[in-house]
Length: 314
Ligand SMILES: [Fe+2]
Image (cartoon, rainbow, N blue to C red):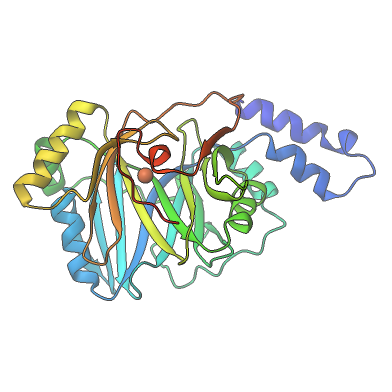
């Protein structure tokens, strides 16, 4: 849907929702999702420096520490790390590119309590953050308000020697998956792409998208609550192979894959960082039309890896 169409629908809202509450407007606007792109993951770690150097070396990023925060950056991908608990997501940052979509998003989330972002001076003051039921903070910014870092000469060298790969999605483990699913879909307005259920019909995992790519956030029901993984999307299978060769040269073990996920149909491999978080290179993720029906998957290894073994979270 174009920005103009979104604006038009908002203008029509008083007549459509006459006599109704703000809930009707929110429900109406939920169908006009603003496009949001994952830009950055900010992780906590008890060994922030070691973690930063792991991402810098293995994912071809420069890293630099400023006021206690490690900034690992390369064109299209960005990981920030600060001192804290292993397996804890400090925040995820999403960019909304157009003013009209930003306005829709603010209306859509006006019923949520904003998070206090004062502890993150690297964020623009206009950033909006919301904590999910597990206290993971999701931050949204209008693209023009974000300081788009330009490449340094050192980063350009990395770009020339490694294939491109862009921050694309992340996953969380949760002990309250129904509440989390509700927050990301009904609260933040992400679109449900696929669900995974066990034979009793219990929800075990779900995948939600903030743009046309199959998932931006994956939620896994698990006995623990923690960060699961982040993924960097590379353009093709050939580039994924080059990334795997790069890990081989570094003697970084591939702990899962190469495989192909059922939900999203993306090929992938994963490595594990010094805190135990998984980190993924993926490619060929499904592009979803707006009217794509929600996919249903059985809770089994084959769902998470059509080619064989899976890391099961529950
Ligand atoms: Fe993934």
